[in-house]
Length: 428
Image (cartoon, rainbow, N blue to C red; front, side, top):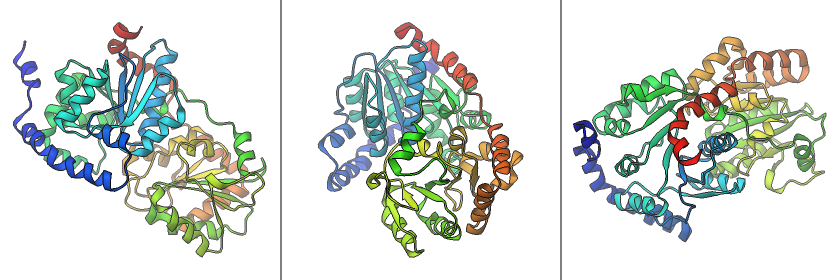
């Protein structure tokens, strides 16, 4: 066996220190979770006492609901193309697990991910014995990757990315993170910028390819727009504006923009990024003389102006009935959120100036529709008012923005080509 291969089966000095300190870090996290009301199953999962799964499963791990949506889409695509396998989905938080549970997909298991403690990670591998481990976006837990590699389980980073805000931190700890990256069997990066970042941090260049974002694979079937409108009491002629992934600090600007349009016959849907900001959002809407209704409580026939999305996994469906959308996360220094999901559903987008987490997508959109980037409540209101009053302009903007969408067939082919060597022997 080559020396490099032998070395990869041993923890580096920095990794040994990390492994020794991990129980001291994650032990208090476990106690905090218990004090915070975590269920027994959640606590068990964190220490590797995970639920049973079918033999030969592929383990897909991501941070939250967004990554789980991409993971679920990937599983759908692979199964549609003849790879029949059980799937294990783990997420870092409850929102991700809830998203998978809501899908109720066949031959699937969902749980919180074990924390990165040697004994806990090893216990989960003993229980599941996965055929492969797919890490969604930036979930690069060193001991999780090491344990898979030590057991001969292929580890792939899919829809791989390194957030710009995290790049300096990764560069500072390159001697620590580089061995983890070298153990990856393949990196399927979202774009060439992300691929170069992985290589610069220590991943093997010959194992890094540009494959695209999982969110641009062939679409999962969306909800029925007519049925959704009926559920929330909106007729086909009622214009709906969606504010997606609103951070707490962005609630005032969103509230002000809605208030500026209060004289128009518009329905507004506001999707907070974190459900913990719901009480503040409801108060801010009320302070502007409007009444907010929770999605979970709305009934057909209710006369509402502002609907607050407090459910998981429905935002894309609401984009499908939107006249236009405002993608938040960029009206403060939060990095922005994916603007292409709304476009794929047929809603033109506006977004803020701080979109560095999606710099590639924002740059393409700015090139074709520079007016899409806005910074104030007045600009939001003016843009949405024009959307409402000038249908030709709205359709023109939508058509221009849709030119930036990746071709789902090409992205799908990239993933099938790259993953097939790791799947064919076991599942074809």
